Image (cartoon, rainbow, N blue to C red):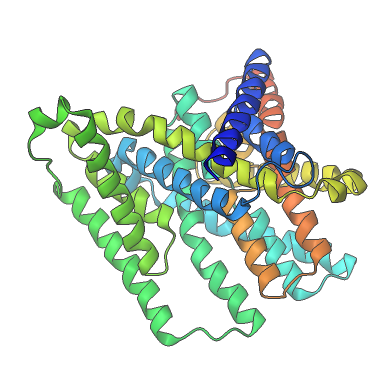
Length: 391
């Protein structure tokens, strides 16, 4: 058993390393290497990884660590002053996505279940991709970065009512207790964040000792990150949302700036498993047989999402350049859409064809997002500078 484990990790590491070096040469994001590695090592090609569910669980840890790190870096006061903008963008985006899918699905003869699911799916962007991109470019603390992060956070919160809606449509009984628990959990976390704005809730003890002790740093970070993730999950909310809130709370203490560096290696490692799990879910035979329609839908989604988000960013007071850029950042479909489509399949709301084509389209929008964003940026550079008040 141990021999298989070590050989699997060795092969995985070598494949990922080779692909990363290749992508580095072409200046492409590394998450593509992780997805392609999942495809290559999955059951349809080399069949080296035999436990995709374990990989998916490890990947969720990566999302939790990422959201915790982002929360620790966010300026909470500035974020709270501009919260209405990301909330408005995220909410209207879902409405417009539903209208768009309803018009398309109506002509295509889709069932209402499929229309609702697909509108939910395309309205969610990838926190993992966008946060990593903004971190790499140093734009995460810019006004546009804060609004974009806010939109992603609101989307993550809205996943909960989406899950409840799918359960309701399928006829699955949801108890009053579960609904009340979700509401209580959301209110408690919001109250914690409100208290963090008005006064420091957290001041770390033993500061000098901890700064010199890497082990203490790591496990203090783990306690807060996964403690808040568990707290949020117990109430029926997203673990990533709880970790994000925990990051915001601890980030108010300036003495915790070491946390980000202490957790970076773990975040990179587990985030790789998240994207690896995406590649493992792809059915290569299905993708090759339906490549044309998958690529066409994926490109259409990128264009439609960019258009919708650009309009919403512009309406909320951003200049044209920032609006186009924000629309491009949020154009791909996100990781929580995998959760929704997998849930819908388990509830019998969609057949295997819709399940597989949706998984494929989500993956391809992620893979194409870097190229699409490059196209958007080149378009932005050609625009005249009309206003710089938002830079």
